[in-house]
Image (cartoon, rainbow, N blue to C red; front, side):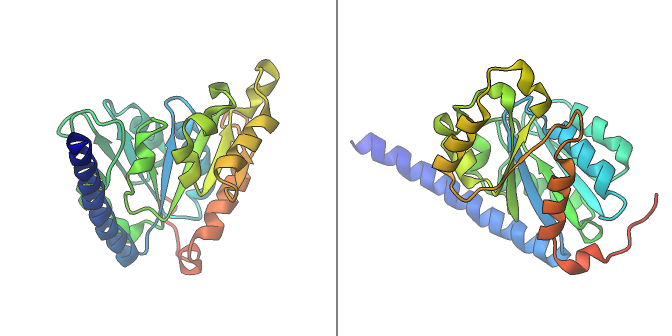
Length: 234
């Protein structure tokens, strides 16, 4: 019994320390006027492909930046570099021990490299994992979860925390529905069971379906002055 109590205290201390840093990050984002979205999913759900579609639509009207999280490599950041928006890579292996998520301290370490005063919308692409990213706040305004229909409809019941903490769920790769035994209605029922208020959008990064609705959702959440800020054509 005593040993179990010690483990709980350590865990609470870790999360308390993370929350304090997340509040500090939040203050920095507010100071800069930067709206921050934490994008989470399992590996391969299509986060980077959806961000490509979002940047294609919004980079002309919004000053957007990317904080890219991966255990190793800069492959996703290199894919997004063609949009010529500020991008900072955080690898959780060198210096962070190969963590399966971004935490507030990792995000904080990257902020000096981002021109936050020149960014209206910062998209944080978290490390692919269905559990750990949901446990650590990073100072974000909202959380978007990307769920792929290739993962199976039972995932909200098996990994409820990420679905429960999401402000929006993107049900991605719907162009594959005709080729899968995925029960969309059953999935939406499970999603509602763990998060009755979370909106969802059906998307396909491959065909572009639903991307416009996602961009509208993002624009509606931004403060009005940010939408009026001129954007460089470069």
